[in-house]
Length: 99
Image 1 (spheres, rainbow, N blue to C red):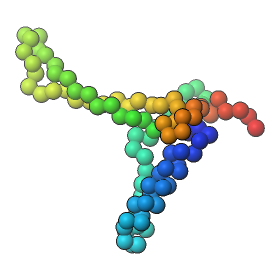
Image 2: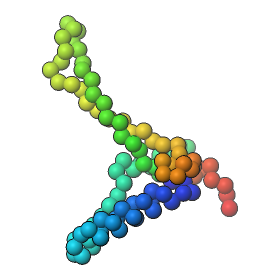
Image 3: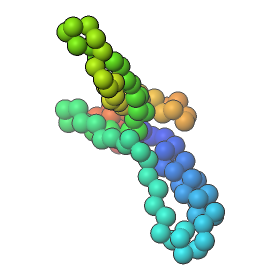
Image 4: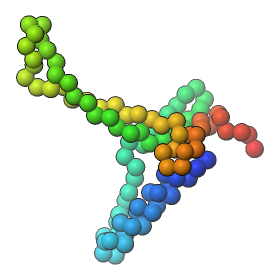
């Protein structure tokens, strides 16, 4: 993602907290992962990030002007340029300095 380790650290804390609330056998089977995770490819670079979903709905109208029976519902994901947890810029692999 970026040089920050926020998403991994927060997910680890959440997983540990959830495991503490479960019986031992159930805690051993617990799996947690971020929803809306994405790998973004741009040219020769790649970055992994978490998207924030935005749901929307609207009413379509017929040519006669009367509304359709059902509303149209969909969603899009907004990908972040900065880590929402620490504020560090999320860098593409090509943006990182060669060591």
